[in-house]
Length: 303
Ligand code: GLU
Image 1: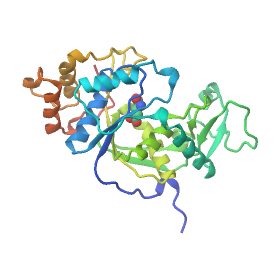
Image 2: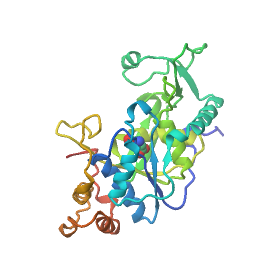
Image 3: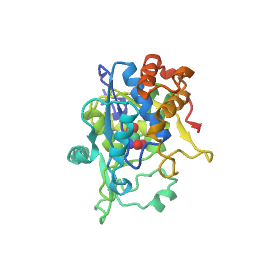
Image 4: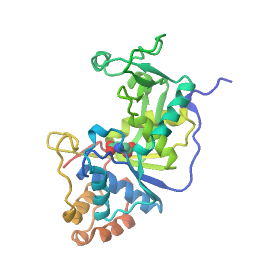
């Protein structure tokens, strides 16, 4: 019998519910990130699960000082208490290095010094041109993971079935960047495994990263998990609310107002009576009546 390829290996189910919120500390929480925090929190608590917090501080040049502390403080003021210690990705570099070595030992990654303009010319899907080079490039170079040609699909709890043929639609992807920083795709997979995450609830903009993450889980023989992608919030120009689009930070003195609005965006139809209640009692109501199937099955919602 032929050895199963990476995309065909069976997954092993995990028991219990461990969810997480994994913000990148590029600035304080804005309404879009509040929505992701709240949805992952409610889904975990409604399932009697744990809710962990992981600060994805992998890219120091993009992280203004104090952002992580601010996010933690905002979550507390919003009444969202996490379990266990906060995990900082900046403390996990040795673990990423080790996994990268494993991937290299398996012959699954290779150095690539292609430039952005070259990749644009390829139509943005990396064509694997460095796969077969015999000599390593001059520094600096990125490390890419070899992908395969099989269709890799999963059933998203909110958005339904989503599949990608990684080699043709995404291409071999970067796991360590040219500047030597570990890529999000590698770190997120290593840490979801390390924290025993069973359920990921996050923004729709990461839906198309999910097949890459499942692929990596299979390559590394990690456990698979359930995914739910909630719509992202876009401004009047259709741009995702983000630090880059100057989305305002949510003011914690307006916490109740923001939570009420976020619950409405998440399709939970909160009753008017709780509009002015404390964040804690709003969350109690929301945990009791949380229904992830009420979340709109769309990629984005206008603010
Ligand atoms: N750190 C990522 C972000 O802030 C989210 C990662 C994830 O939820 O997988 O966009």
